[in-house]
Image 1 (cartoon, rainbow, N blue to C red):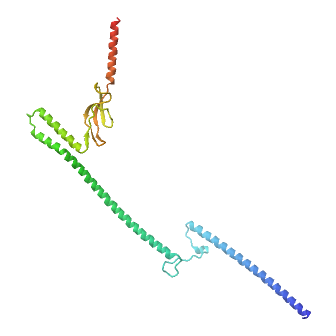
Image 2 (image 1 turned 120 degrees about the vertical axis):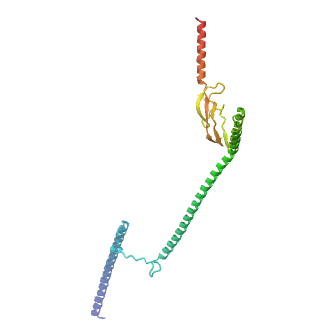
Image 3 (image 1 turned 135 degrees about the horizontal axis):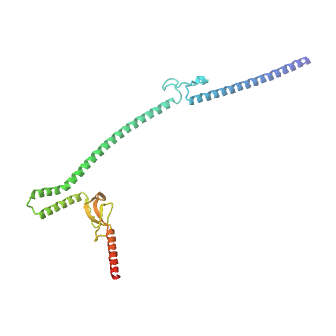
Length: 263
């Protein structure tokens, strides 16, 4: 090979190297430019998405196309091109609707059952009240029968003792009829005053009864079990005034005796 050929090859190699180097630089610049454009595009999309969601949360009437966003239209189930998950969502909605219908039916049945229960309880309450009144009337009917017989047998010539004895027997029959219903009379005379059972009228002085005891039963009281139906009207013993008056009288007598002894 001559020196001219060597020079031609050398120049050609240098040209190839230079071209390769220029192509590499151009490719790098193109890649850098593409990467920059991709980064700018991603940044622009991110900013558009942020603006879209801010407008959506603010409640504005928005259009995704205004923000450069491509939102696929969700088609109805069964149509061509149905979005992914729409079938499952439709199935879930159907299940919820069926459950709602079931719960609504259950609520209506419960409401109807409660209304029937309320009416039944009200009817039973009225029946029990009527039965209680009937029992009370049946308990006092024998005493009323005795009273009717006594009224028919008494005349203007009837002895007073006989009339009084008949009235006592009729009163005892009434008391027995009340006891059959669980109603018992109070016998407060001589008992300590109890504000739960007795209603005081006045204070009286009775020397043979202790202080605070019941002296007189002005109106009989009654109880049913542990419940007081009507308290008894009573007079309560209070001997404090008599004792103070007696002590004053004793003091005056002692003073008179002392004056008589020492004129």
